[in-house]
Every structure is written in C-alpha cells, then in structure tokens.
Length: 369
Image (tube, rainbow, N blue to C red; front, side, top):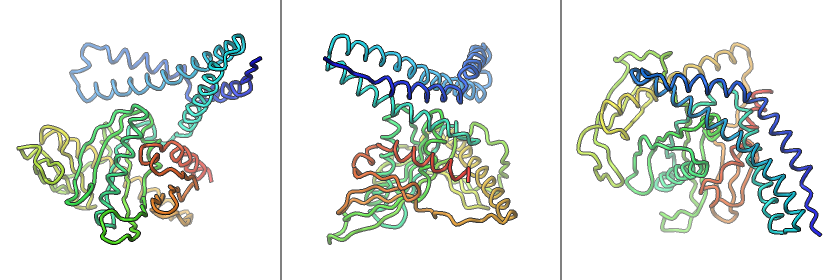
C-alpha cells in the first residue's frame, strides 16, 4: 500500500512562504497596485509620456510580484491535494508527480526567499548589462558573445523581457561589446552579483596548435533609471558621434546615421546606442544610461571617501569573480562564494540560478560584516 508522507516538507515550505509574504508585505503591495491602477486609468495619463511609462512599468512589476506570490500559495494547496489523492488511490504516478512538484516548489520558494534579501536602493529596478571583451584576442571576443548568450538564455528561462540596445561585432569571432536591458522586477538586484571580470580557460578553437588559451571579459550591471535628474551634464562635457548601425562583418542594417555614441570627456565613459529607429531616440536612451553611470560613479566615490575617512579600507577579491574551465576538468567556479558547477554547457545555456543565489547571500553577509 502506498504511503506518501510529504507533510513535514510541505510544512517547512509553508513556514518559509509565510515569512516571505510578511517581508514583502502583500497587503501593502495590493494597496500600491490599487493606487497605480487608478493612476493608469486616468484619461490624461498619456499626456505626459514619461510619467505614463513610469506608472505602467511600476504597476506591471508589482502585479507580476503579487501574481508570483499568490501562484506559489495555490501550488502548495494543490500539492497537498495531490498527495492525498495519491495515497487514497494508491497511485504511484501521482506520487511521483507530487515528488517532482515538491522539488520544483522548493527551488521556486528558495529563489523568492533570496529576493527578500535584496533591499538595496536600486535592487527592485530593471537592469542594463554591458559585456566587453578583454585580453585574449578572438578567444576573448568569442567568450564575450558566449556570456551574452548565457544571460539572454537565463532571462528567457525566467520569461524576462530583453531588449538589445547596442552590439559591436568583432572582425573575427564574437563581439567587442554589447549592451542589453532585462526588464523585470528586481532584475538589477538579482543580476548585479554577476558584475566583474570573468575568465575562460580552454583549448583555443582559433589557434593552429592545441594550446590552452586564457581569455577575459568584463560584465557591468547598472539599474535602469527612468529619471537620473540628480546628475546634471553640461553639453560641453559631452562629445556626440553619429554613425550607421551595423551587423556582423560590418554589414549595414541602416541606411541613415541613426546610431549615437556619447563620450563623457571628464571621465572617459562611453555609451553607444543603435537599437532605436531615430537618432533622437538613440541619443535619449544613451543619455539616460550615461546619467545612470555617472550617478553610480558619484555614489561609489562618496562611499570610498567615507571608508577612507573612517580608516576602514579592507582587501577585496579583485575584479576576477568567476572562472570557466573547458579543458581537462569541466568546471565553472565562483571565486567569491565557492559555488561551482561541473556542467559548463548547462551554465552557458543559462543555468545560473545557483551562482546568482550564492552571490546574493554572499553579498548580504558582506554588508552585515
């Protein structure tokens, strides 16, 4: 006779789920959704396009968060019913289905629990990711493209909308750089732990000899700022270059000079945009990203000054934060958290949740030290 007892596991999940609902404050979330829904329904909302986009984006994010939380509660209820049914009918197939659902729900609730650790100023915002190839020639530009695909596949797994804003293709393989946006609640707080220098070690597919090649790529993550009004940028501090958008191998995909590159002369920060159809739209998008980067730079400098004045300068891990080994031992290892995977192919296909969860927990511990 079948006796499937998952009561202790389900009860543990319910306790964690209850804590999550309390931290997120579901009732306050409902109130915010009601307020934003009322604003979104105002007949004059779109008279101010910028404000309308801000309201609708905030509403969409909060509705998504609430729907996710409520769906988990329903799935926990359904799981208990499935266990009862499996025991009453002596149905091994239903029992296996219940075990699979328990494992899936455990992962989902663990991920949501990690989200509650994100309480930074910008954590709930969408994210803009920029990947740049480093040392390593064709291997580095190929590696940069592998990383871009990895993050796009991760976003796809979670059904997060993605918008590629700019891509600079290398003459050989891969890309020199790429910038793309992930539009989802807490995207920045989640993916920001991926920022840093990534290292790839493998037998190069581009060399004539079977020699091991080490290459590098940098990942930058910043929050999407609807308004970065705290940073005033004089026109004299910016150099504007316009050019034609291009695809792989220099093939033109645009017959007008609509792509825009902004260079902030005092800092040397460069932002390129070519995704929009007009030069005006690309310039506006590039300016928003530039303002965000300058705002974050300003905050970093202020924080560094405070640490210096407090005499609290500690050694850091350095830029390099993860290594990918594709020869001999097949391994991906995070150098900060110690988290690793023996399946690099799965990682490059977007299986990043374990690394991201470990990174968020590591960051929270560092903040509390």
